[in-house]
Amino acid sequence: MVQIKHRFQSFEEYLSYDDGSDKLYELFNGELIEMPPESGTNVQIANRLFLIFAMIVGIDRVRGHGLELEVRGEPRNRYPDLTIIRQEHIQQLAKRNTIRLEMLPPLLVIEVVSQCVARVPKAARCGASAVGGFPAPHASSRQSRPTQWLDLRRLAWGSPRCSDCRRVEATDESVRVSPGELQRDRDFIAKRSQYQDCGIPEYWIIDPETKTILILELTDKTYTEIGNFAGSNLVVSPQLGQLNFKVSQIFDAENQA
Image (cartoon, rainbow, N blue to C red; front, side):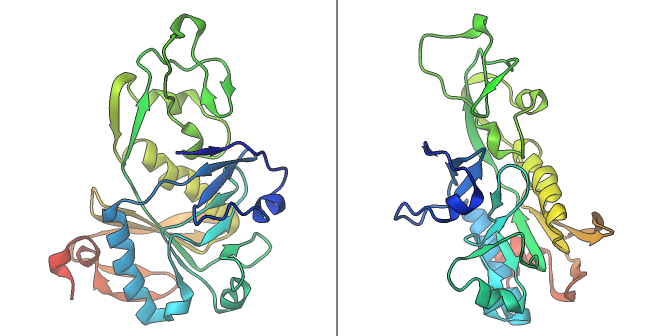
C-alpha cells in the first residue's frame, strides 16, 4: 500500500489531482492511500453480477469498482465493487466517474467482503496517541529494527480505535484477517454507515466465506435488513423486485446458467 505524501486541503483539490496513472486512491485526512487490487474471487463475483444487472437495467447503468462515491467522514470517498446508477448519472459521469454528494445517490451499491493479509510488529500495543492514523507503540515496546504497522485507516472513518487494534493478534508473522474481523468492519459497519448517510436506497453485502447476500433497504434514513439470502434463494431487491437468479449462481461456476 503506497502513501502519497501531498496533503489535500479539500475534496475539490483532490479531484483536480492527476498522477498520470490509473490507480485508485482513498482520501483520508487529506492524504491519499492507494487501493490494493481486488482478489480474483471478488472480481469473478462482481463480473457475474455485472452481467445479470446489465440485462435488467442496461449496461450503461452498471458500474464496476472504478466508480467513485464522495462520502462524509473518513475516508472521503469509496469505490463499491458494483453500483447501479440512475439514468441521469450517465451524462453527469461522462467526464469523471465520481458521484458527488450534491448529486442524487445511486440506486444500489454492492460490496464483496474480502480477506486481507496484514503484518503487525510483535511488540505492538495500542498507544495513547496515533500519528497519521497509525497506532503509536508504547515507549517500552520501541524496537531498533524497522517495523511495519497495520494501516487501520482503511477500516473505518475517523481515527483508529483501541478496539480495532485488538482485533489482530500481535505477531511477527503475516496474519490472515478473516471477513469476520477487520474487513467485515469496513463493509458491515463503516461503509454501511457512510452509504446510509448518503441516502443510497439499497446496499448489498456479499460474503464469499458464508456464500450469502445481505440486502439492506433505506427506511426513514436508516438501513433495515430485507433478508440474508443463500443457496437456492431467489434474490429480492427493494429497488428492482425479484431477480431471476439464485444466490449460488454468483458463487459457483458450475451453477452458471
